[in-house]
Image 1 (cartoon, helix red, strand yellow):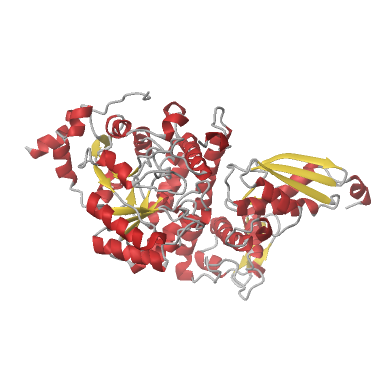
Image 2 (image 1 turned 120 degrees about the vertical axis):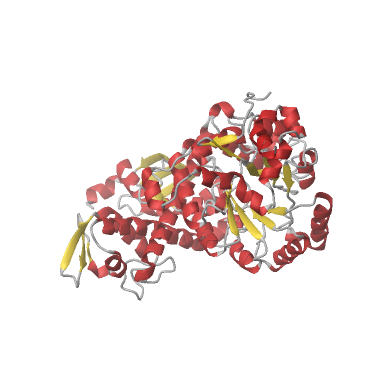
Length: 259
Length: 362
């Protein structure tokens, strides 16, 4: 990045592109695509981002992940020194906004919470990995690979370009395949630690092991199930979001109703 | 006061064939302002109302005041007259920390069930954190109401506790007592987050151990584990005594028919047509429009190919009634004959409704 950009800070477009990489961990979809981001304001090298979730009682752990991820993503921009995140209309917005902007740990912001946020993130990342694996495997089958070839494909058999190329038959044959699902899978495989582990195989069972060829179909069915689960939950969130924003909805604040 | 009267002269039909409907998930609740004792009680009913309006066609929505509390008369009207529900299964939800007299207790439900005992199954409930007093209460429910099943709410608050697990030692003692009392059907709520309850307390994983440890009991996982449909299906695929209750999944058919088709595809693929039970979750949603919408749902060609399943009349007959009848020892043909002239038929003018059964009885 040039010193010119550094001095001037950043642009809203650049910030939104960064935020686009932040996902709702339960749905594995970008918070920008889901329309959660309400506002991006830039003052010199300071950025403020405001966002709202579909319901006021969305899991605090999920809200926390999105807020911290957003802060980190924006602060990674060369023209940004500080990003302040503001979660709106959430039951725990005070704890989350303060905790995330002050750089606290989740357990410090929520002393009552049972578990840490890392465990929740790992569980959801593992599910997102399966859903992305489903798409990548379908793309490879579509491109003409057979189940045995897909199950035994290794990370080093891939050439990432546009399109990507998967090498099979002792790397003597290269097959073109759409790059998007492959790259998207690799990103999650990396985040879930599969790229750097002891196995060279690209695709894995839900437990992280290589896929025995005779279980290929079952594993792909489980990956499909992960995809459908995320989409189904997305529909529930959508509907709640619409209900929440409807006119004439009773007020969220409970105090006035308590006798 | 009521939205409209659409009397059903006949039973629900699918491709011209009659469907006997057992709504396996209904409530008679009280979230009136007088009954709310904790802020959580107010949040809870408002959250329910979001689910209600989010998935109900606009012209069929209730007002918030109607929604807080409805009486047994309205419920009977909504189930038997406005909708062609043939029987209902009450699933209580206590929430004693939130409501002075509880939200939806077995004794509340009995107010309607006792009026039409042939039309309802009255389930009870237990909370393993209540210890010996809880066991006495479970025995009382069996003796007084002859409960056939229990609804379990693992996210319920009690003192400092924000939930409990079905695979805990204490829960196992209660499951043993259920087996001893012949209370065979266990309905754990494993569904979407409901404010202000802790989402993780609805984790479906604890059903696995309980189901394999108690093969003599049936575990009907309400709301099919959403948002953990994947965990639920995988557990159910391995535990033959695990069933899926469709409450909450069903209303997706309204605005998201494609998603509903996918979810039905997965459920039929992993569990098969014998282990799924329809439930409206009344009064979360009204069965009248819901049953019609659900049975009108069709899989896309792509979904049929992908899952190798079809929503045929036989499949709907099982999901809408026969599977619940199997779990609760209900003889559908005998019920149809009896219902042709029972109090409900008299009150709501349903004599023609069971006309087919009359012929069969002659």
